[in-house]
Length: 118
Image 1 (cartoon, rainbow, N blue to C red):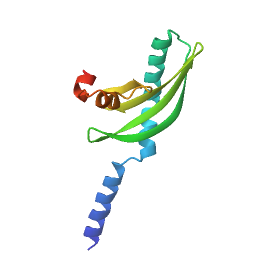
Image 2 (image 1 turned 120 degrees about the vertical axis):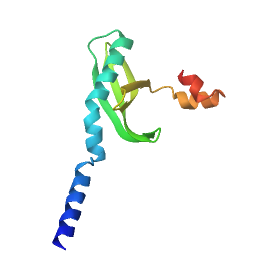
Image 3 (image 1 turned 135 degrees about the vertical axis):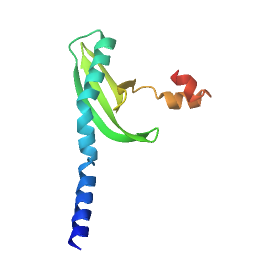
Image 4 (image 1 turned 45 degrees about the horizontal axis):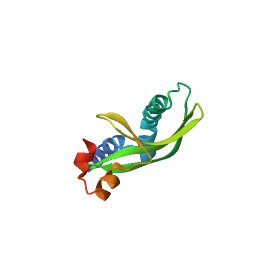
């Protein structure tokens, strides 16, 4: 009986060690997300002196996987922009213009989403 309890306790602790909370998941990717948004702002503004502010962060379901998504404000050289940043382990972070939702734009225009992405 003691062996069964020990085995169950070991399995439970091993399972819990592999889990991270949503906040930890978001914290782990935030630096990379803000760097990606900062680089995009530097390029679009033609300005090396930019600052970033995380306005919102959450996890979203993207292609059957939970990915962190950040709304990052970038300011510099008298310009401001808000970007949406999605991150994943395989390809890093992708920065999107928050003014356009390419999935919604594609549906409204009758285009397939695949043709809009390509």
